[in-house]
Length: 354
Ligand code: COI
Image 1: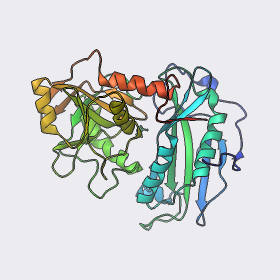
Image 2 (image 1 turned 120 degrees about the horizontal axis):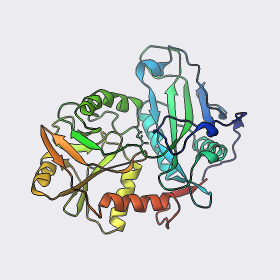
Image 3 (image 1 turned 135 degrees about the horizontal axis):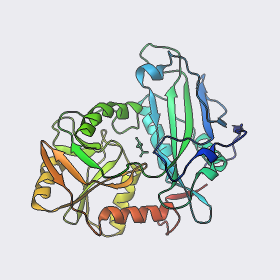
Image 4 (image 1 turned 30 degrees about the vertical axis):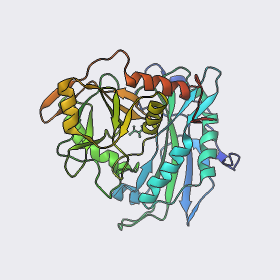
C-alpha cells in the first residue's frame, strides 16, 4: 500500500470552470479540469509535489523534450458509482507501466507514494468533474517530460512529472473502419513500441492521416519485418473473433501491454470463451472474412474501452464485418464497465476506491 498522506502543497482555483462545460457534448481530450499535479526532478531527486490550478507551463525552448521527444505518458480513468463513490481501475498497472516506459526512455522512476497520493488528492479536488452514469468518466493523463535546457543528444538531468484530467465520454465518434498496414510501421524489434513513449503516437499521425483520407479511422499495425502479422491499432490493442474463438497477438517489445487487453483475456477465460494469444496473420483474417468465419474485430484500450470495428481494407480488398446481436465486444464491454462503475462484483480486485 502507498502512503496517501504525504505532504503535497495544494493551491486551489478561486472559481471552478465546471459551469462552462457541457458534459453532454464532450469531444475527447479537449476540456481539462481545474487543477493539475506537478512534481519536478532536480539534482537527482523528485522534489515536493504540488497541486495547482491548471495553467500553461514556462519551459525553455532548449528543453530536451522539444528536441528529442524524451517523454512518456499514461492513460487512466476514474468512475463515479450511483452512491457518489469514486473508483480507479487497476491503477497499480498504470503506475508500473509508466515506470517501465520511463526506464526505456532513460527517465528516472517516479515514487509510488507520490503517484498515489498525488492522484487521489487531485481526484478529491476534482470529484464534481466525474459524472455518474455508464459512458461518463474522468480521463487521467499522467506524463513525464525532459526539461533540462540542453540540446546535446543525451538524457536530461531534470524532468517534470504531471497529471492532468479531462472529462470524457466516448473516444471514437461513430463507426470505426481500419486499414491493415502494408508499408508503414509503428514499432520495431528492440524499439520502444511496448512503452507509452510520446513519439510512438506522433509517428502514427502521418500514416493515419493517409488512412483518414481513404475513409479509415485507424490503422492496424503489422509487424515491421514482413507486414504479415497483425499487432495493434495504436490507440487500442486488437482482438479478432474467428468462429467462436478469440485471437489476439502476444505481448512483445513492439506491442503495448494494454490493461484493457489483459482484462479482456481474463474475462474471456471467466466466461469460457476460447482465446488464443498468438501471432495472427493478415492472410488468415482475410481468409476468415472471405469464408464467413470472421465474426468480429474489436479494439480494447483505456480511452476507447471496447470498440467494435465495422470493416477493414488490405491491399485493395475491402471487407465489412457482420452486425452481431450478441457480440463478444458488447459482452466484454458490459462485464468490464459493470466492474468499473461498481455495478457488479470485482472478482479480480481491479477496482480501487479513491
Ligand atoms: C489510452 O487509451 O489511454 C491511450 O493511451 C490512447 C490515447 C493515445 C488516447
